[in-house]
Image (cartoon, rainbow, N blue to C red):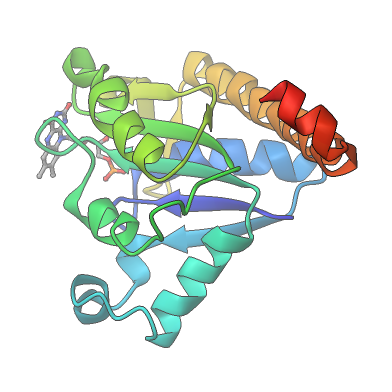
Length: 195
Ligand SMILES: Cc1cc2nc3c(=O)[nH]c(=O)nc-3n(C[C@H](O)[C@H](O)[C@H](O)COP(=O)(O)O)c2cc1C
């Protein structure tokens, strides 16, 4: 099962996407299959109009539904995640992140909104059913450099934290898989005893 990479930035050249890329490269190097969901590439009318059946929307929702893990990155706007990301999350089913491992990432202009992952992003992930939220990473713009080609890349400390978080995600996926297999093999009596 793939890992979905959700980008909530409206920008084509994006700092938060640069962080997403570090995690993506790391998990791909470890054999994971990945799928991208970039909110900015979805048609705005369909996104804001809750057009679940519009082909690009349905395709994006399908990528999230198929994934057993989600890495979700957003810039901080006005002390929270972007409205663009919220529009996409509003389209997910109520339990759209249930049984998925989730790694949240955020970037902000300053360290002041470091806790936005905890007070703004995690509650919405939890409301969508996520129970395995691992290794969140926040970086301020000063920790993300601009490359000569106009793209961005995080400094060594943030890159190392992202790789640690990517490893945690992969470990959590193994753990989640083992838990599912154990549950599937358990007898009804064992399951009621575990509840
Ligand atoms: C409309 C807007 C609102 C912002 N609000 C905040 C904020 O409240 N706190 C903060 O730390 N940075 C804020 N920023 C800065 C961005 O979060 C920051 O530059 C981020 O790294 C941009 O990520 P991106 O390149 O992936 O879009 C804001 C930027 C914009 C454009």
